[in-house]
Image (tube, protein in one colour):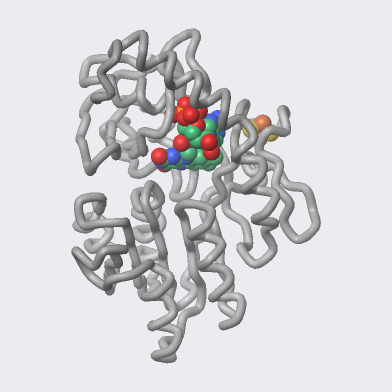
Length: 282
Ligand SMILES: Cc1cc2nc3c(=O)[nH]c(=O)nc-3n(C[C@H](O)[C@H](O)[C@H](O)COP(=O)(O)OP(=O)(O)OC[C@H]3O[C@@H](n4cnc5c(N)ncnc54)[C@H](O)[C@@H]3O)c2cc1C
Ligand code: FES
């Protein structure tokens, strides 16, 4: 059983938990993920490792509350225990001294950029990070990401902080300013990653995206996380989650992510009815 050591509400529907998981922390690297279950009957869901502390034997996860299991997870408090916490899974992000690395994180994808930015900085890269959210209230991890970046740019849709617009507007500005960028790493909602690769493809900048298809076993056996990359079938849990963005079939990824929408909303409704009655609160 994996104890919740700490909990922090980072923004609206964005929660961070620190979990005691010594074996996972001993081996975790930037870009990897865990698959958790809150209880014996619970669904398995993948979450990226947002930070790890090998000495403490703990892992941080940061998640957006979007459905039944993330709702259950957000209801947990320090002292509670998760049933399973399997990992580290997936291949670590490729980290070398590439030169200048631009890291783009949007929404729930902001936290997973932190260990990648840190590892890239430690490898000697100039790290430029861009993080974005709809409004300032939904931003988080500015201090953490700023501390491992040479420059940090912020974009909000409503202009409440940083540039008014999207992370892709900042990316376009940097490319137009002829800033030399050797590699881009992007993580966030699929439409954001797709927009990033559309821009970097034209500019000829190699771009790695961290894909988030539906996963079940996380071991390459069930096929749930199938994605097409460069006309080849890949399983994101074992071949990824990082892939060359210019080769990803985003249409297929979007369609497969939406396959269970009806069942997911029925499951969330049933959970809320059982635990909160008619109250829509959290
Ligand atoms: C490698 C990987 C890393 C991820 N890291 C993070 C993270 O750090 N923070 C974060 O907020 N989210 C992350 N996600 C997405 C997260 O797994 C889903 O939000 C979560 O599974 C939703 O479960 P739910 O029961 O709360 O919602 P549901 O109502 O079941 O689903 C809501 C949406 O989440 C997605 N989803 C549902 N089940 C799964 C599943 N088993 N696997 C993948 N996606 C699913 C679907 O797009 C679905 O439409 C990651 C996904 C992957 C594949
Ligand atoms: S989650 Fe089953 S093959 Fe990847």
